[in-house]
Image (cartoon, rainbow, N blue to C red; front, side, top):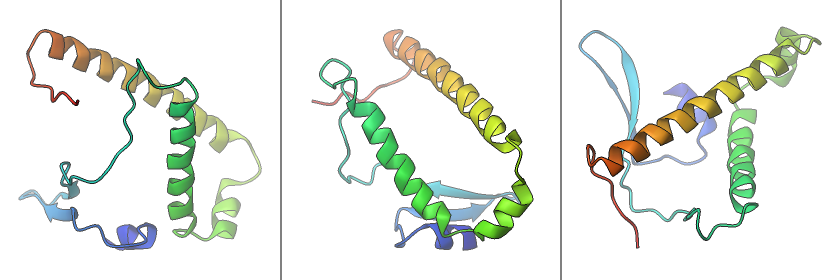
Length: 121
């Protein structure tokens, strides 16, 4: 809860937390909050649009996390080697690959009508 308060500029009424019977803490968020969004239709979206949108999301995330730690302490902990940069790059590549596999599985399941998919106009 403290971390959420640090990185989140304003309270999000759709974000909450809970504790399972086994003592595991978790955050949850209402997905259908009816807020605006950005349509990313692959048939009409320019190739530059998604990367630009991702940069904006990354910028907003970086700003939030910039408030959550002491830069000098973090820099001291990480040291001067490239190990952290390389680890983050490996993680990002692996995460992107998993996201692609998850999306492919979602598309396949939707085409086979194994899961309901909401269609947008």
